[in-house]
Length: 131
Figure (tube, one colour):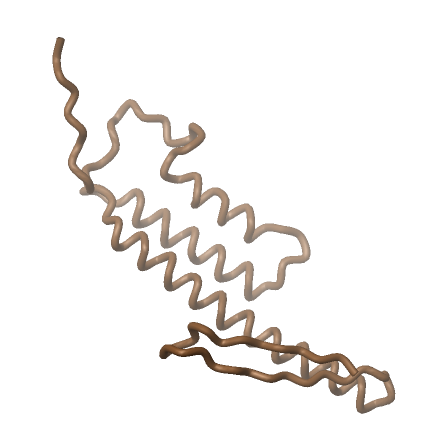
């Protein structure tokens, strides 16, 4: 009986592995691509999701194997892009709602941003008050 030895991290997957099976490394790419195509999805959100799917597919299918750090870099970059889109859309929504309130729509919004302990956007909290 031969002992099986686990392949070192970063090696390409075995040739016989079906990447379409549940749990395959490209499942995340497929899921991101499906999320990008949700009907009614905001174009900027869909764009970030589609770009992330393309970058992740490129990293996961590159000759020479998968670099886990690069996969994490793609995902962290995507989350930062998504945060920027969310903040931008949130600000636009507040501005539009405030304009409606000023024009007699009866709704006014206030936005308070409180920073957390560390640097960057960690700990930032948004509050929205409807009057």
